[in-house]
Image (tube, rainbow, N blue to C red; front, side, top):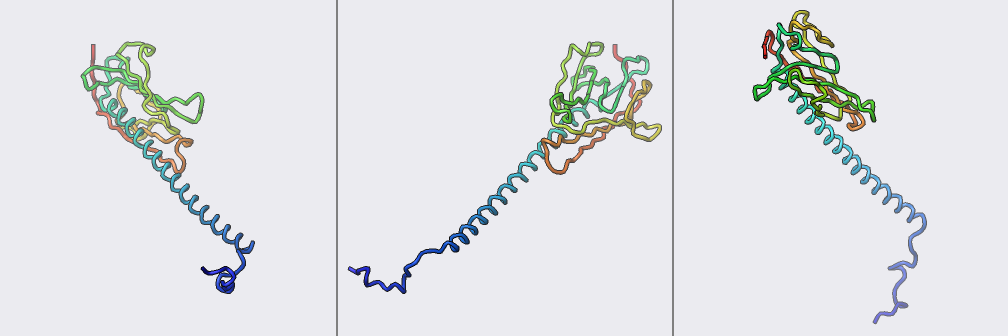
Length: 207
């Protein structure tokens, strides 16, 4: 058995780490852990932003497709003032033919949230011709908007209008603008524009 008194102290040394060495080692370790944590946190934040942005774009595209389907089948009756197309910056009222062949009155409108004034809800309301609006319930087709609006293409003046009050004709196209609610989508906000063309000179009567 080797006794401790025979061990050469020059080989193993007889002192521990100094306070300065401990401080330097601890500082290097903390910096390394902080750097790794910051990189991980930044990566998670970017991933969440991209996921939220993709979710918004998918929801916005779906909402615009729903509205486009109605607008493409919109019609008016030159002999009946009640069957007309009326549009404003935040609302559109018109008549359309559904895929089942029935006639529906459509109302698309944007409305600010009462709890969060900067947040906008997009609604769609369908009703039968002559039916009171109170008898049909609006459905939310998008709930995370910060930008919501409509513009109308006047074929005669070749300009986009913020209102459409012509009872004798319809706009040639409608531009839909949807943008994200910034509190739910950090970073650069992308406004999604879509132009829906409406067949011109399509007069239809219903009884």
